[in-house]
Image (cartoon, rainbow, N blue to C red; front, side, top):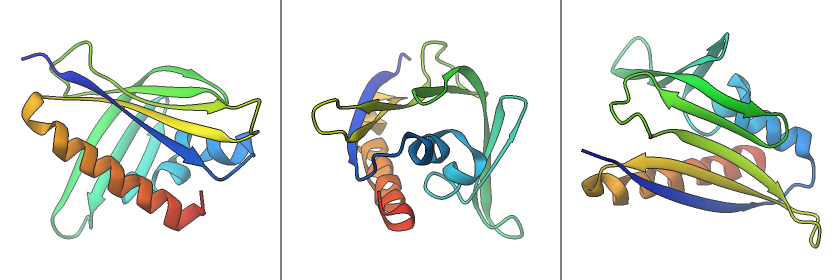
Length: 132
């Protein structure tokens, strides 16, 4: 079954592209707001939720494309829809000087509301841990 694309936009309270890029493209940044732990090795990211000594889940994703201070596009290694991906993109407004985070993700129709809820929780975690 084909997944549907969802897009979430979030205005960031930072004018530093280096800070934002670090939060959306590095293990340390991603583990502050997307997963409990993130490891990266040669373009392959391992995301872990929960404690490793108790119930936890791990998923790996491979980097499809990346442009410094612009975007990171990943595809889950267990993804069955070849067109589905996860993209974290930052854009800069020349007018305000601020940045916006654009998240593109894919879900089955019955999972779309849950995926939006997950991204809302993740963005709240980003705000709490980084002030953005």
